[in-house]
Amino acid sequence: MAKRKLTKAARFERMFKIWEYLKKNTDKEHPTTQAEMRKSSELSEFIGNKETFNRLIKDMARTLNSDEYGCKPESCWKIYFDDFKKYYGDDADEDGETDFDSEDAYDEFADQTMRISGLYYNRTFSYEEINSIIEGILSTKTVDTKSAERLINKVEQNLTTKFYKTGPKQICKVMEPELMDREQMRVNLLMIQKAIDNNVQIAFRFNGYTYRKKLEPIRDGKDIVSPYYIVASGGRYYLLACKEVTIKGKTVKNMSIWRIDLMTDIGIAEAGGKRKGMPRIPKREVENLPMEWTEDFQLKHLNMSYDKPVWITLKIKSPKQEDNPARRIRADYTFLHDWFGDKFKYVSTEKTAPYDDIVKVECSPFAMIHWALQYSDRVEVVEPEEVRNRVMEKIRNLNTKYGITPV
Picture 1: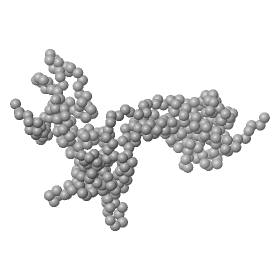
Picture 2: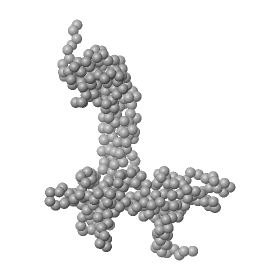
Picture 3: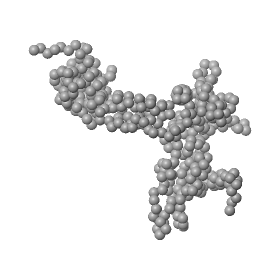
Picture 4: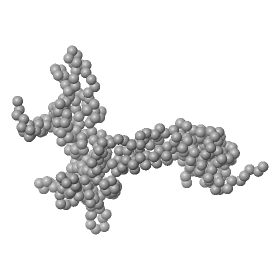
């Protein structure tokens, strides 16, 4: 009986079904075989005989693993199997033609016998990257819980395989005030990003909350700033920027940090003439602004404070055993690690009771003053003297406010 000659539609359908199967049921650690694919009820009728299957897989690999310049680098392939790697991989021995669009090269490829083993679909995103995407969806302030759940389902259904270990679809959150309409937040973020990409300044009204729980501008005019980085921290979005000001006749260009949820009426600052926006101030001219973004920024700028970080020496209470001051009672540096990560530096332990530890951290002085008061039962600022004096001034003011007479 003569073999049925497949129409283009049937051939395309077969390729599509195989492609769908490979996407959902294979990865680098879990390749498949022709025999295993034939056992699949959803796929078996589309595989055809051995010759047809071989030709389909070869043509899929040729199509998905090449572009107008020929065979792509192995890392860019979508369809992997052992013999395709053998003849066309990065370490292939022969220097054969890889421009599959040329007639001679295609004829040679079509006639080439290849065993289809170790077959799998190479995913665009690794499982670790998928986890990062899902974590980002869960933590974003611009997506509500139900929308986040739908997005995560789509990610898992379209970007993963049956081997992917699904995680929680939502995180239980404590109640947070709804600071801004999510759509308005997206508009603000897009406008700021557009300005950053085009190296231009933005203008906006900066607001605060009134006793009526409404946003109102804190001043009459708009603020005009040069934007550089959008930062997500503590459930909010911030903008690192520079607002050029004049103080006593001197132009000052310091980094400033703005809460994006408090911005309204935002747009590109007009320049006049044919220019599409006022050029932003070059980064190198802005005091305290990092030239390149570094992930430890928050560790040096607690609560997004924007003054210049300095090295600060602290005395930390860390109880020791009375009969052996070198031996600590418990692991009690968690609070310090929560704020400074592994960037703090242990210096020494005092030689006399109560055997406190001396550590150093690089931090904004403004932030340190408030942080040291927050942890006043465990932390003492030693130096710089200026920072220590400002902490003492805060304490004196608190004593006065609460009517406490020094003993």
